[in-house]
Image 1 (cartoon, rainbow, N blue to C red):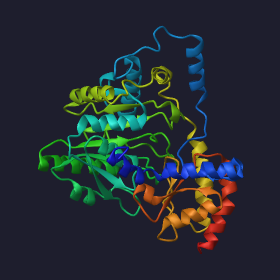
Image 2: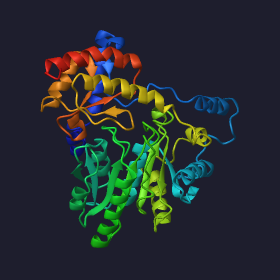
Image 3: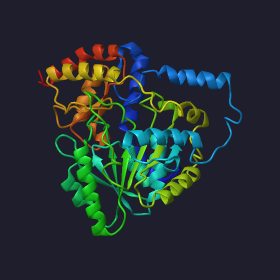
Image 4: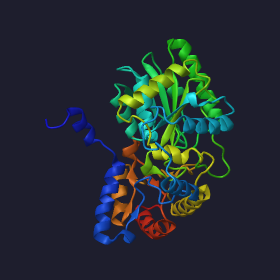
Length: 395
């Protein structure tokens, strides 16, 4: 075997998102980019806010001494302090820089958290549908994924979660606003979940951690506010990035925040900092840390996404497509009119529309649309969506 057997096996079930993205690249080369409507990848076409560009320009024209050198593995103290101030205001909790670790995006941050927490064989509960990389992240660090179904509206099913928690459970991994459905968990749900985890901790007599993957926490629609895990449960760890709220996915800049209410917060932060180093991240990108230090209150215009949500949701539901209305993020997860959603995704592909089959998120019978695209992409794709809907008897 030329490569590791495990990697060989994982490649066979690797990301459908990337697969569809790559197939889209081939279609664009054949038919022209303007004639292919690519909803496969959550890669925002929105440019960063002007404050980001201004800060970058300032750093280039007036470089600070030592700005490209190593720093503490947890990140620049001033950057961590800025994040802590933002969280203290948002959460009403006494966050300080000692609760923050700067990381290489949310993906890097999740790997750091799992490395710090998991012993071989520890189980991590994830909710279906899920971002497929969670399976690989958990496996990276000797953990075992325990997949639990959500309810009909893709919200946590507390009874199923309770049944899944055993003496082997170490953590529950949540994602809200949710990829791929756009569902946002409310405070009532999280409070009930916190109560459940405390009860289960008492039963199994070891700590349970609530890990929240939050790159879309500022992309909320219809006046919703973000419900925090920190208000719901003491052993909470949030992982986020500025990929979406500052439109910087390629810069890989994010942070981990550990609840100040966690009894062992200091030890956990030490473990996170150590894991950041030994996983080879070493530290989050120096330049980007300096950029985002003064921009914690800055974000993209959410109305830009809500307008696209409304256009696409209203148009598709009129054609007969069925889905839960997204409340945040920039994804829709319609139900396929046939059990084999891959067949339906291929039918859309014949119209040069690229979506991702639900099996890529562990949920067959659905498909994902990432609408972080230009309006013209949505508008020009709608006739093709309608033709396929008619072919399958939706309208």
